[in-house]
Image (tube, rainbow, N blue to C red):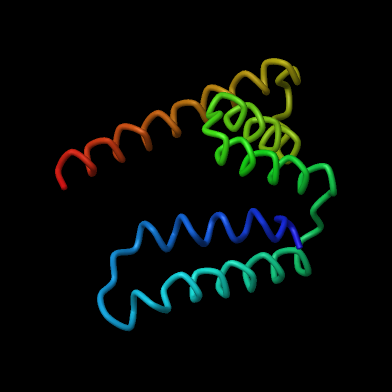
Length: 121
């Protein structure tokens, strides 16, 4: 598995909280999210060659998010992306800055969108 059992459970809980279902669906959406996450995690781990260091970083990302430490999550995500992608002719330090900037931009956009959704609700 790529993510720890605790981190898969945490993500499933967040998905469950985000899905507003009614009746019987509300009883099973959290369980369904957990099952789907486990299947995807297991499938990806079997089909892809993922270094243990990348798995550790991905778990660190989830741990940082659980602790509300977005800065650490951004740094960890940037390091994962940087370790997976090499842009020829660009120095490693510059490459890291590019990925860090891109991650911060995406997360900033997500924060703005989430705030708008919560405000509209």
